[in-house]
Length: 330
Image (cartoon, rainbow, N blue to C red):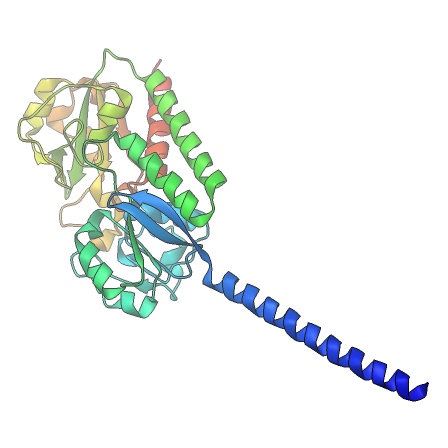
């Protein structure tokens, strides 16, 4: 009887070890699957893309996405830190490799980052092929607003798509809802009898930002249905706006001005010589003192970090400021 009990105990131990081994193997397999992650299929500006979900190493170069990624707590391995507004956490995180600016990029750092996702665009759009070669295992995702498409819808598409990539669908919806609400407010506040002028100030100079096509300011005309006070042939997307005389501005007599202060995004020591706050340039101009928008204090300025941001949150903030300014005039 005792010998039989010993044999049974030994056999039970062998079975237990075998089962433990199988269980461990299954756990290891599950861990491997979790580590390898999965992918999702999405559409970007270049067509169908397969993106790691969640990505394990992210590089970001598109200014319009930085604030969204930071708000969502997305860690970056590398990014265009030199082009980020100071308020973002990435600018204080030494672990984020700085790719520099688009004028003097250090693209080789992408190799060190070993990304599986690169969110590319805006100033770095020209480097798509270079990034793809340096990180052949990564998906290069580009979600810049596309030419010929509604600008506001493109900002929302970018946000929604990033929400899918990072599993932040609810957060993306909140950003989009806030944007839509700001547009609704701004439209309601705008008096359709007011003719509007879009301007960019840089280094103390005033540039013209044309409706629709002008840098940053131009799309606002389409989104809000603003009536332009002046339309100039051969206008461009120049970051400083197109040349225009203060006399031409004065002669068009705009009742409303929307203004981007390009220099405001930079620290004082980084600004061009002769730079001055946009309010000083416009509101203290002798030539513009009788312009209705100046006399009636109907000038709406973009947020200070706009030139280094230009994302959906920037426009949300601007449209709410626009509504605040015009509502107080009624």
